[in-house]
Image (cartoon, rainbow, N blue to C red; front, side, top):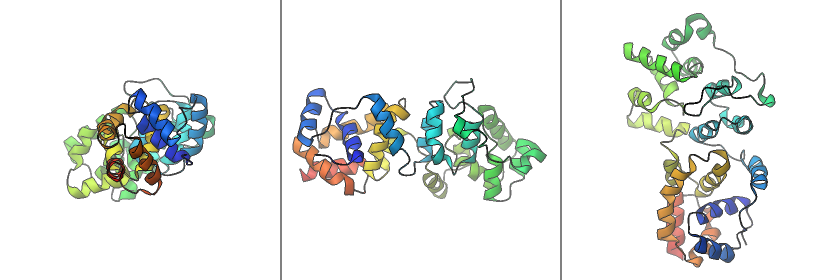
Length: 278
């Protein structure tokens, strides 16, 4: 029987990528309970969500739901991103095409980070051009909040390239428009910075490239409630791997449950190993 809630979530997510008959037999073989009612799942997810840091892009996917309760839940994961925190407490929407203000959870009232002095004195573009350190770049960049702000940044950079520290601070924001980020840089060192900041190309990249597999699969399982619009892309990336390496082989699924907690590789590596061992 699966003892760990984390393993239960992860295996349950993968079982959900199979057909109904296979899912029923696998659940019986590894003693995996049926899916919980959504209210119980939400309660457990609130307890589990803050166990480990999240890539910044995953936090952004949650904010895109524009749900005050989810915003409060993901708030601790925004500690390193002043701009996203500022946007949340100002009630700015993150979902594509949305313009209506998002109610702010009472627990976050009065939590807006300090407005940088350079912004007060020089305005947005002036503050971005006055940057001479990464710290100041992050501070000035924290005032880039809306799509119009990003357009202003792109136009200013096109007129005259912004300082390197400004470009760096903005490029590692998960909400930086991809076209603007590509303009800011593409060399190996730049890519490494994005990886360190937790900026992802999308859910498929998260599902197949991040580690450890168990935590990734746990987060994706919670994603059905936290960022449902993003989960299908991750499922499409993993479904062929589940089919090829586990399929309807109950023994392979049993091996998966035995090795998942101590496995440090990616989800594809976990599936390949479980299938080979079985």
